[in-house]
Length: 98
Image 1 (cartoon, rainbow, N blue to C red):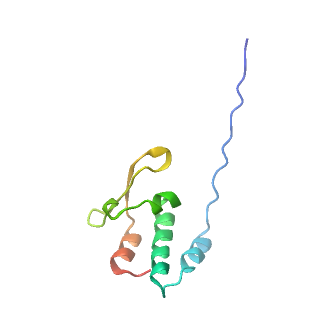
Image 2 (tube, rainbow, N blue to C red; image 1 turned 90 degrees about the vertical axis):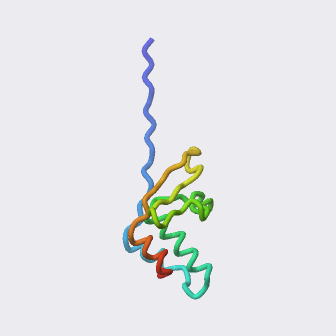
Image 3 (tube, rainbow, N blue to C red; image 1 turned 135 degrees about the horizontal axis):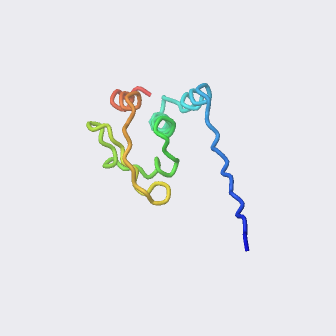
């Protein structure tokens, strides 16, 4: 008996264009602390590929600015991973310039 299995195709995720990402990053108001926080969160998501749940679960101890490392704990499928913080994102964090 020869049974053929049908392969399952996975749909690729949609990718933002540069202009769309720029518009998204300009949306939070810089006049309020929550706007600065939201822009920082969006920047981390866009520049480092983090998911909303991963960003919302970040703790101060997960970020090492001196080592340029960010640790994602219990990410997708419960996996931990270490990421390098891009220079642009690091400079924005250090200067508070969002």
